[in-house]
Image (cartoon, rainbow, N blue to C red):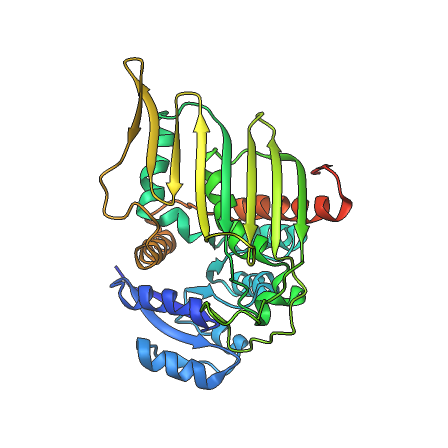
Amino acid sequence: MSRLGVGVIGVGSIAEMHLGAYAANPDVHLVGVFDVNQERSAQKAETFGVTRVHPTLDSLLADPEIDAVSICTWNDSHAEIATAALDAGKHVLVEKPLSRTAGEAEALVEAVERSGRHLEIGFVRRFGANAKVLKSFVDSGLLGDVYHARATNIRRLGNPGGWFADHKRSGGGPLIDIGVHVLDLCWYFMGTPKAVTVSAVTHARLGNRANVTSLSRYKVADYDPTQSDVEDFAAAFIRFDNGASLTLETSYSLHALEDRLEVAVFGERGGAELEPQLRIATEMHDTVLNVGPQIDHLSFDFAEGFANEIAHFVSLCLGEAEQVAPVSHGTETMRMLDGIYESARAGHEIRLS
């Protein structure tokens, strides 16, 4: 079996997870990288044993040895670069979110169809060991019909600044950055029903909170304490066409006692929490049971999750696996995100088209 030739576009912090997983995969040849920062490209190429540093995006996409690409750039370029890569005959793994808007996502569906290539969205948390185990439980009917979910990703002090805080480049704040992870996981375990209505609020009250110096946090290289035109909190209630419902809360910055990550689903026969750690609630012999699965990682492990995601993408490109996060899932997620922002602007519940 020949190895898959891979190129990585954008070599910032998240790209390190892609590059490391590709470099460790025996079925991959890391052919090339491209970043607007050529010095950074050269450094990453040396670190991960990449064959070529491409001077332009067009050069990388024209490279005949590259069969597939990872797109790890700012949100505003995801759809454009993914379309160009598909049209160049490359398979695509694009970091979440798929795009900034549902309209951009829908245009990508056409690009996938005309190219005949695979596009997978970087919903990496679907590939965590805890998520894979829970999905097998849900698919087996252990929880019965899942009719409600709760998605929470709260950070007390977590606005990274830079492009994350610039609406033009990011498309939004915590909702489109970290909220999308928990929204996607809940929706995935619910069986990916179609959203029909959304009622939501967003708040932009706290900004970067650069005045707080007693707590450390991740900041991007171009961090600017005066730049933040995205929301710092979002909350939503979503109804689906099968009668199920979902509640979501997410923030970059909130006067909360602690950071909080929660993914929980509730069905007719049982319920489950994926985060902060995998636990199952069920009944047996007229008795309520709380069940703790015995697995290596009850919470999401970043290294394992990215290794699993990259291994799956490689197998998909080589014709050895089925899609787990196809473009249709990305477009539906963007419909929900657009609906949340629209409802918040309107100040009332809206019906999704």
